[in-house]
Structure formats: C-alpha cells, structure tokens
Image (cartoon, rainbow, N blue to C red; front, side, top):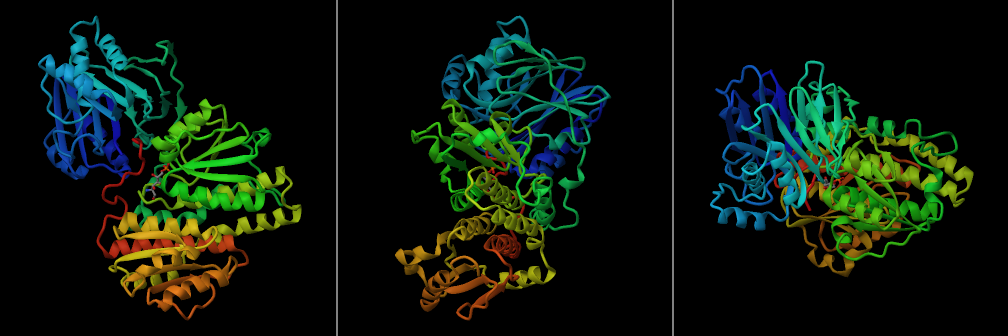
Length: 604
Ligand code: M6R
C-alpha cells in the first residue's frame, strides 16, 4: 500500500527520503518517487518497480545544505503503475504526495480541465496540486490556499505538499490515512505514514488525528484540528529498536517471522497469566456487563483468527459469537444491538474496511474492542478498549506471527470471559493456563521438520488445485493455510470444512488434486479421517498432517504428540506456513512481497 515520507533539514535529503521509503517497502508498491526543493528549485525523480530503479535514477543527484523533500511509494488504485502516475505529482510550481482516495476527483478534474489545466496522470491525486494552485492565485498565503483545497476535496487522505511559494515549508493533512511528524535534537523534521522510517532519525513523534492539517518549517509545527482550532502537538518518545525490523540472517522476513513465533507468543502471554486466571489489565471488567453477543469483524488472515475465536468463545465462554468479513458487513445494513460487544481484529490497525466497521459500531453506540498489533494505529485510537498482540513489526506481506498472536489472545480472552460468566470450572481454567504456557514450545521450528517440508515441497508445484481441509477450529486453520499458499505461490488453493467435501468439491478429486488434510488427534479425529479416506478412495493426492500415523496418505507430516487440540492447532499452523514458504521459494517467487499484494490495505 502507498507510503509517504517527508524531510526538512540540512542533511542529504535524497538519502533520507530513499532510506525512509525503503522502510516502507514491505507494505507493497509498484512505483516510487521523490521531489526535493532546494534554493528555490525542485528536483523530481520517479521510477516504476522496485526502489533500486529510483536509486539508479537519482545516483547523480546530490543535495547539500537546507532542503525540503517529499517521497512516496505507490500501490496503483486510479491509473496503471507508470512513471506518470507515480507520485509526487506536479502542478506549475508545487508537488504533492497522497495516500488514500479523493472521491470527488472526477468532478474537480472536469472543472480544472475546463479552466485549461493540463493533467499528466490518470490519478485522483493530481487534482490536489492543481486545485491548490488554482486557490493560490486568489489566496493571501499558501496555507490559506491549502486549507481551502482541503475543504474542497472529499475522501480519505494523508497529504504532503511542497510549493515554491513557501520554499521552507511542508503542508500536511490527515483524514482517514495514517501520518505522523517526528523531531530530533538537531532541529530536523520528518514526516511518514508509519513510524518505521523514522526509527534512528527522529527522537519523538506526533501522530496526527483525523482532520488534522497544518504546516511545518524549520522553526515551527503548526497543527489545526478538524474544527480549524489550533492545537498543540503531542510528542511521544519513539522506540529506536531497529534490530527487530531486520532479517537476522533468515532468507526472508516471512521465514524469520515464522521462527520468531515462539518468542512473540511468550511476549503475548507475558504478565497476562496467573496460576488460575487470565489477566488483561488493559480491559475494564465492566466491558462485558450487559453483553450477550460478541461480533468479530476483520479481513484476510485476521478474519481467519476471528473465525477461530468464534469456536473458542462459544465452547468456553458460552457466549453467542458471530464473525463478519468487514468489506461485506459495512454495506449490508447490519442489525447492531446494544448487548453486542463489537470486536475488530487487525495486524496493522489501518485496514480501511475494518476501520470503517469500527466507526459504524461506534456510531451505533456499541461497546468496541480492538485486537491489534500496532499501537497508536487508527483502530487502537478509535476503539473503547484495546488488546495489543505484541507480535512486533511484521514485514512479510503474508501474515504469520500476527495470526499466531491473535489466536493466542483469543484463547486467553475466551477464558477471561468464561471466568466472568462462570461458564467454566476454576480447575478447567487452571488446566488451560498450563496449556497456554506450552504454546511457545509447540510453535518452535525444528530443523527436522523444516528439512522435511523443504523436501516435500517439490512434489506440490503443479496440479489443478489444493484443498486444505479441517473440522471445527481446524477449518479456519485450513482457510488460513490455503490463503498462505495462494498469496505467495500463486497456486489455486481453497480451505474447506472436511465434512463438506462430499457435497460438491469431491467431484474434483483425481491425482492432480492435492488435499492437505488436518487430522488432529484431539478434535473429531475419526470423523475427519473418514472424510480424508473418501478423498483417498477417489485418488486425490493426500498430504496428511497429524500426530497419528495415517496409511491412506501419499505424504505424511508427523507432528508431536500433545495433550490438547489447541496445541495441535499451533503446531499445524507452523507446518502450513513453512509448506507455503518452501513451495513459493521453489517457484522462485518474491516471498516477502508477493505480486499484487500490499501489507496494509488502506483503501477499500
Ligand atoms: O492488517 P490487517 O490484519 O487488518 O490486514 C488484513 C488483511 O489484509 C491481511 O491479513 C492479509 O490477508 C494478509 N496478506 C494475509 O497474509
């Protein structure tokens, strides 16, 4: 998804902007650009594809002394990924970068074209800079023109604009897309759409609120809120831990993140378990007062963790639970009753569809909770309550450790609610606490397992499709396994409930149909086993994952024996992640940045 950086200061602006964009690469993009204003003149560079192309184009460009600069990585929405459509976009003497969507751009563009303005790109963004320059002609100052422009555009945005008419200033606006400004002791100012580019540069950061706009120059940071009232910046110390954002010797971020799961789950559990209960200090116990239903809403992998949660909440907390895909929920006039706790789940906390459902729930006066990995993200700031998953920065576009920590939180939360509602005996909760403590060891990757999956992966590079099948909570895990494979191998894969195969999909069975069968010993083993036998009898190629040997399988991946189905769940999760990774590696794909995908989907 698009990323923004900005810089005001005396160091090499080009390098600071390019380094910042590199930190945003993991979000996914298809073109990039920078514009630097120095000594009254703009230098602008754009390139399609990876940042290395932009680096090549800027190799002879040197900045010395004071300059201001803006940069952008673009993930195409309006118009193809071309150089002309890449940001920054130029007016006559100003440049703009923008994340989000300008909904009324077509109307504004028509008016500007009628005024004789020439457009170079097919983007919605370009109207911002032309509208600003139109307003500049009749305004007292560049800031007045900028404020007027904001009133004229509709949609979601984070914007940075630089103009020759005020060459030491960057104008900013945030409405629905993330943006922050950072400062350091040297008087430099930095902008970015997430805090990673500012690590090592800025000491403190201010996260802008929706509706904030203003300007920054070497001596001031001027912020107005959505009511146009001047407000003070709220600077917070920025963590400088860059180490966790690097590959640590692994081939891919995704691989590193799979291996990290044991440690991050230990962090997720830390301080939240006593011998006999789950403790969420961040939750007010009254959150569940008067609540008769939990509604979970999310997208993608987070949706799969929500589906897993529904099994746990109904089984342990004995509370009615429904699960919604955010992009569907927001347009279907849903019934929102006050006795429902509305829970959104998101790694990034910025996914546009999920964020929108949270706003809907807030408007309907429902109690809201977010399960999120990114502190200070839009969802965290908006929801009444928040549980952070503590997975650390996840860079691989294919989510792994975020899912693992989300499911861990949900298992804990189901016990927490069970205690509040007296739906489980104290001894049972105590037993589960011991099991929770075992998750970090059940997700540890053994060399033996990884080698086995690397070898096995060569047999699964073709075929006409994969079915990942499971029952109960292993059905959402099957969905997640199929999504992982699709995302990074580009092979067709579906997740299906094992018992449902005979109602249609079994017609596809032949040796070229690969079935990845989840056969947990402690959850409906016999039932799942007969479902797999039905497929085996029809000659589907079967890869079974279980702790119990299964002779009807073509390939068998043996997991450790454990005492509970949730521990089997976590171990199988790792197997599915590694299998997808190794298939993708053999196919020569970009594991961390798969085609057409973005890490954080901040447009609907
Ligand atoms: O940041 P979120 O959890 O809200 O993101 C939701 C999905 O976009 C995300 O899970 C996506 O499906 C991942 N690429 C899955 O690997």
